[in-house]
Length: 511
RNA sequence: GCUACAUUCGUCUAGAGGUCUAGGACAUCAGAUUCUCAUUCUGAAGAUCGCGGGUUCGAAUCCCGCAUGUAGUACCA
Image (tube, rainbow, N blue to C red; front, side, top):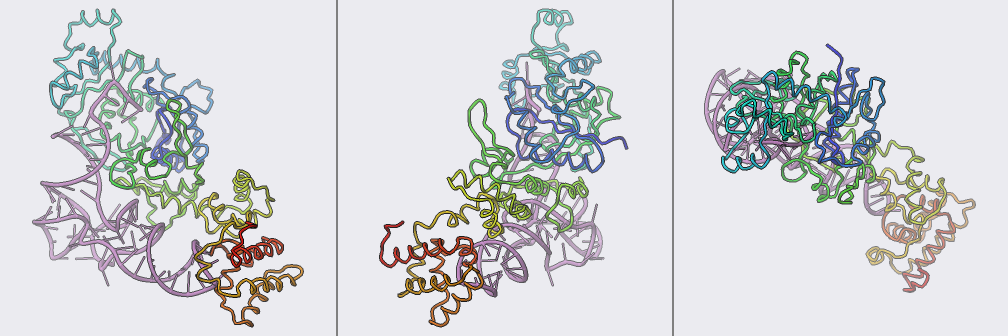
């Protein structure tokens, strides 16, 4: 088998959709598994839809995700090859001309308005073998007339000439054999004089051929036009080196049906783009996985399993493992609904593998934003204590704010249920006992507290929870003496005194 | 409308004629642990395999029909 060469070929019309990320990922896995090459090609043949910054966004996204390319717009090469279709403009014209010369394509002068009129006139109108005879093209117009229009610089398009009644079969690595009759295909525009650029269909075939692409791995929305592409390969005489196709199932919206769109993300509150993106035209900003605190490894793992499965019960895969085990025959054929909950779970798993220090450095940034200046060592101890309960670094604040800011309110429900008479005195007595532990030791403090509770026949749950309430403000958090340990005795004492005063004397003056 | 593709727990999926009283994961619920919350662990619930016909001794698995869904049907990719 010849060298595996695959490409990911996005259009720079905006941010990179998560479905596109998955397509790129599968391309990447397949290429790496086979020791092949993966190419990043920018399909900007529609000049009117170009969006500034989109290309760089795509490059940045893959860099963040750890998907690397061997060739592409962002990788310099010595051959002078451009991977941007707008810069390959001169290449395509000759193939369009060649097709016209061979009678496999023709020139059409119909304006968009004229075609629109036809569409209204005839239901199910399509520009094909049946209708092209009544249109303005080089098949119906006298040669001299065609030449006259060309000489007059009239705008035209080149349309492929589809011969009806032929079954075209495509052998898809995922969908199997799909047969379609050429009669249902229309004479697609493959080149347009208005900007001198080909349409996607021609550009993609020419580039894939020139770049020696061995496998075309793309979304299922392309399956219906695959027969046209097969025909183009044949017309151009490249049928024997035509790449293999693999059409990936769509990623569907979590609720209802249909393709996952940016709107769904906004509506349901999750990102659809890898990185935050601000549309230069509207100024509208969309959230990104990176900014929401997702780890690239988690996104990769999550996406890999959305539409593909290993056939084993393994769920967690590193990129290396994915490269080893990925295969097209384990890609499912039906669309997969997007489930953000699963993504969160993956993130939780991957976050647990991060060191306390790594997480702390990030968390410290959040603390600084909140105006809290504290040592990394202190933060690390807190992270060590709390990281297993979080899915995102940002969750840490909700879990740990009381380590930085003393409570300003006490959960009323806990007071009502557990703060019985004499609780204040008991807590102050316990504090006195703990004070005798010099230097402070959490185990000793714990034992002394337990002894006190037992000797005075106090209710363990009530007492401990009220102690906790004084330090945290609520009935939550890790082991109480771990909190005392981190807070330090002085701070603990102050908080207990304040809580007792506040709750029993209804004195909130020090809060 | 036309064409193609798809259809197994709420979701992602395993399943390649008997091993399926259909397995796993997320989510849900319960129990255990704990002063609390969370984590973790254990367990439970959850799918008449879209429907109807065949083929076969036997079908989630093969065939046909229907239904539903999705995609495409642009001088967009």
